[in-house]
Amino acid sequence: MTRGGARREGLARANQRHDSAATRAFGDLLDGLNVAAPPEEHLHEFAAGAAGVLSTDGLAVSVMAGTSRSTLVASSRSATALDEIQFGHNEGPCIDAFETGRVVIAPDLGASTRWPAFGPAAAAAGINAVFAFPLRLGSETLGAMDLCRERAGPMRYADRIDAEVAAGIVVQLMLALLRDLRSGELPSPVEDSLDRQRVVHQASGIVAERYGISVDEGAALLRAHAWSEDQSLSAVATDVVRQRRELPDR
Amino acid sequence: MIGEPTTGVESVPTDRELQLADVFVELTAVLTGDYDIHAYTYRLSRICVEFLRATAAGIILQKTTGDLQLLVSSSDRMRLVELTECQTSEGPCYEALSEDRPAAEPELESAGVERWPTFAPRALEAGFRSVYAVPMRLREKRIGALNLFSDQTDALDARTLRLAQALADMTTIALTKQQMIEDQSELSRQLQAALTSRIAIEQAKGMIAEDLDVDVEEAFAVLRRASRSNNVRLIDLAQAVVDRALSPAALGGTLHSSPDHRS
Image (tube, rainbow over all chains, first blue to last red; front, side, top):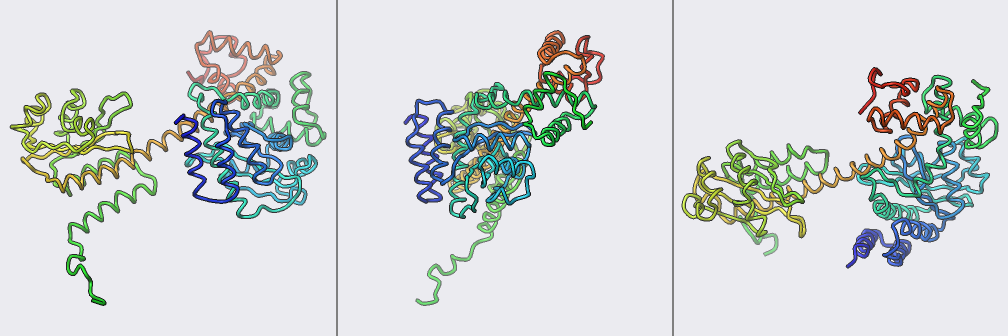
């Protein structure tokens, strides 16, 4: 048996502990993966398929550490937007799921005040329900898996169990992607995601040095400024880096 | 027959059976919570001495390279003999491992010397008269062996070796679980390092740019030059700047006078 085949069989066995139409569909998704394809593609195929199986409009997988967040895969435009909004405001269900190691259910973002910046921005982008699952490996949390829906509404308990099975499979597929970590290499989607955020981190450094605050405080200052000016974080950051723009509220 | 116990008096456990149950409960309880693998394996070696009545017990592991490595010994006297075993690849542990079944030499002084010409004299010199080993394996993977040495000839019978095998299997589970936990935290640590180092470098670029009044590309060049000329990793330098252990202005000159830069 090929290594890929053995891995898929192992994952399918894990599924059988909780037998449902959805987990059988996950097994079919895994069986349908092209063994010769790179692991990036496996995770993408599974994410796209699982989003449909779980009756959602998108699935995003992110890896996180400290204040560093990046998207590993997003199955749809709304899933991409979901991560971007969360990372931009540095708040949201997936960050909470990562930080607490618990499932976070947000069935109606328009009506919730839990995330004052993220909630309205997500609703404005047409995302009204988000369900976030920590990606756990033993006692470690590596990131989160987000599911999003355009329409508001709760998640049934059985669907939540199915989603937790999907999160377990995502962790296994992620491990294959993180194979070059030993030499410090990150998968290319993570590098791309970090690349897009470079300007924000540079601007945080500039602001931190200018005002004698920490880089985390610098980042918070940029966010507050973007929020009050109703501009995107990256637009404010780009201005700071290119033109050394002053932030008037300091 | 209703109400009559069919096994009669045999159903009452003996003291030794109860002791055995206690031993297994002790060894499993340690798996459910945090445990120290070294304390665990030392406790196991003591159990082999107290309960299986060996004079000394120890565990030798086989590394992925095939080399043998001593993990634990219940006594220093045994440790020296086991180290010989690791170096010469000869003796009961090596045999149990390579043949994947228990190895027993009840008469070390006679048959043992012919069987293991290097190992046996060393073991005899240390005062042992019989030696035994049971393999430790997880599915097809051989991970090591549990050694039991005694000061008397023909000290352990086949039934005792079966108990030893059960204890060895318990230890295999503990060692495997420990390895899994270590692998997972190592992966998580590497992921964290890779993710946070990328952003620390960008943050440091911003701080240097602001302090030296240059653009971020030039700031990166300053950082790279300082890294090369001082032979300090870029990420360590960047982190020192972010943590304010190193001022951007100091990057242009020599770093050795700065309060804290990590190498």
